[in-house]
Length: 183
Ligand SMILES: Cc1cc2nc3c(=O)[nH]c(=O)nc-3n(C[C@H](O)[C@H](O)[C@H](O)COP(=O)(O)O)c2cc1C
Image (cartoon, rainbow, N blue to C red; front, side, top):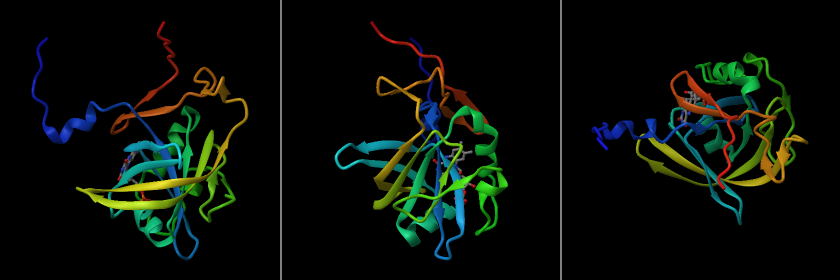
């Protein structure tokens, strides 16, 4: 086996493809924001905690610092183009959900809305936030989880039916529908 050096700052390029989420937040005036994130992971089951890392200049980060809540929406490949639009820079207070032609639906535990076209949505409150280099790590507690009916098969995401979006880097994604099961 021959290995070559990789710049350490590029490590995340091989920690890929990464599950991609759409995070919705509101600012103090109730204006809605949405943006994609792929520095994402589950952290704990009891209590249910998840984490994602955000650059502190993002509106998402500023909003959740103000309101201490957010929604993690799980997109499928059906809305890849729309997800890409939500990643564009819009002025603060402009809803990327509207810009992308997606549909807001109310949450039950938090003010930030859910995205109807996503296959699942997790309403979260901030558990803690820590500086982590050029990103900040946000851990959220899942207060309520919604899942489209028929997308789970024996408790697992049915990837034959819904193709998750996995981020490789930049404009490149892997659409995860190639199921392999070990013996
Ligand atoms: C697929 C994808 C994944 C991304 N992942 C992250 C991420 O994990 N952390 C981050 O800070 N920005 C990430 N970004 C960049 C933000 O989504 C982007 O800068 C966005 O405009 C931020 O929006 P906001 O200022 O409305 O929060 C990602 C962008 C894309 C397209």
